[in-house]
Length: 338
Image 1 (cartoon, rainbow, N blue to C red):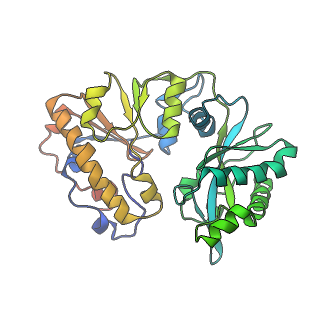
Image 2: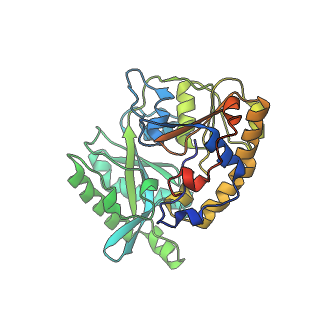
Image 3: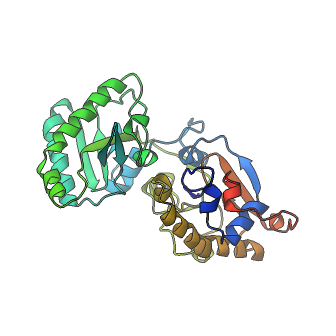
């Protein structure tokens, strides 16, 4: 799974911005069977591999799974992510920048969280920061809101992703309160003096309850992402860090379905950083796509599935690679730009 593989949303000249030197990736995509997925995003794709009893393909909530990894504890009740964000005023809107866009140390996080808890603790809301970049909000009961991950809103107007639903208006007011609470906080005053972006709000998303058990068709998980690590832990399957290249997969992993999550491209894709994205995909070409192609040719792996997003899947086998009459199409073409 490679979120961001198809690059930032670009205009009609997008094909000219895509790297031209990706022969291994282009061969894999061009010889594959391309399938349309019922999933709408990567979280729904993951639901096909990790399910709670009676889940019917519904994605598991992100917050209790990443909390399991970040804190080492099982959330007893409802918990949601409430990550620190920087909101930047831009003409008539506020643009959101998530915690991948700025540095935040542990003491700054503790001070801001303490201010929040002093103000909201009386109503039973409590903010936690097991890691500076990932915060969590525990509530007495689940709110009636639908939320969006901050990375999905990277650099965009927050109105595109504010909480929606029956309680949406009250949550908009709550977020305005948090902005006022953090605005004059000494942490942000010091950050502004240093020329660093203020941590002037939190972003609620990914809320839910931790299921008692889940089932999975995956034999092992190779991922640095906390969501994938949480799924592996709850599903009782081994999980290890992403190696430097694909050649290490067969040397260290057992047989069966190995789920690899490569998120090197996601941030640059979301923020429209074309040069960084291009550099990243060239690195993946050498470290991953080229060795994966070789391993398929040699029969060292039986089947490869590539997921560039939630809506598509490319299935490649050694037999499919022999379809020499299939022209190698560019990545831009496969992504709908050619």
